[in-house]
Length: 100
Image (cartoon, rainbow, N blue to C red; front, side, top):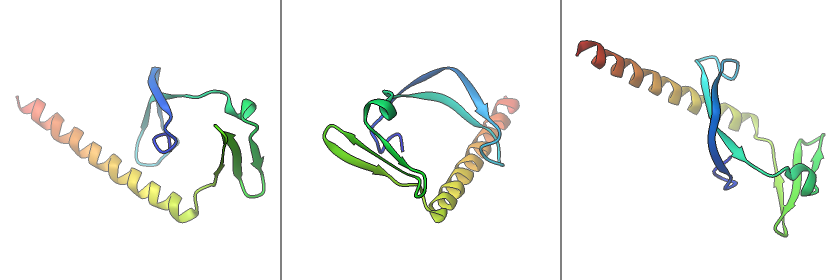
């Protein structure tokens, strides 16, 4: 979503891990999104019933829709796969370093 919206990021001054975000391991937070307080200066509207956020940016109206349950599931599967791949890479790297 950060890339899709074209937001800029900076390194987080104190990276930390989120244990509660997924069941398969930690997620490291090491980037911060640089944003203006757009909720206050962009005249945003949050529809609590549909959970949509509407705002205007540079004269163009944007509507942010919540993901569908299938999209959430797809994202969870992708995150799990990526996490497992990272764990395997770490294990292989650890084995190589212990052999030498």
